Length: 337
Image 1: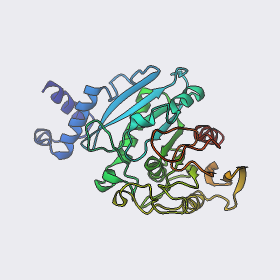
Image 2: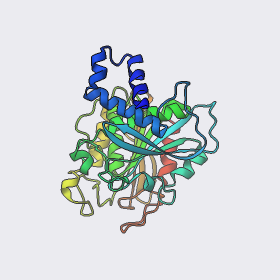
Image 3: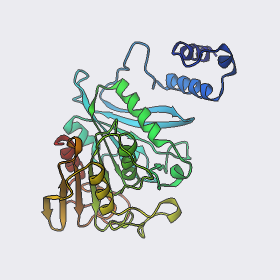
Image 4: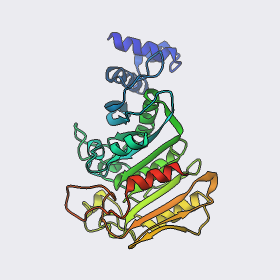
């Protein structure tokens, strides 16, 4: 009760309410705000009264309350992090049916190792899940996928709140906040580019096309799209492949070509592509002279199926391509923009 009283006093002091009757009644929106503030204080996720929350290098798990739902994320701060110097932040989104722990597993994606080598902070948010442990999670990326889409989960709002929370803990370079994701996570990164262009300056989706319903970015966002030509889930030419889960849980995926063309147009790039790499059926093209210094790049592997180039996976299906390493290609793309 004492915590509740302090939270209500805090709300009043911040000018959220002005009439005593509203405090006594605790209407729906205020009640939700108070609950979120109490939960944040219990889990240590809120900003304290004296400034930023200190955080040490290493791996951390945090909990947020958003839209009445408890959401979690992992955060890796590299050993070389210096609080006096702003660090880049990468938000890495797991695939549909996965979770933050799987995406953070260095054996499969290698993002922790890349973070240590390159010196960026990496966050692994957990998608919407019906299960308390966060397993079998999905992202509401627009026309896909699963329970997150069907329940209209506010994943954009959650990720925005997560980034704000991280910026209270870590000295983040606001000009170098990026997103990547695998499959449904790649789809979600496109929605972030559409709706959070004020936060993210570049995205690098892997094996996931743009299936947003609306898209009006407030500024150009650089895009690196990575896809295998033989992807049997999100088909290169468009549609859901034979290895996709139950069709009602996904969508008729947009093709890679239409996705890239959309962002070339959104960013006002020169329509002619420049070939950067070509070897054994694998190639990378870049579209330059975009507004605001943005770029659009496409890297296509000849094989690898529905996977993360350079990574590994325990499931059946094609082994990931080794023609390019997704982590190296994306970090080079982010840093040379």
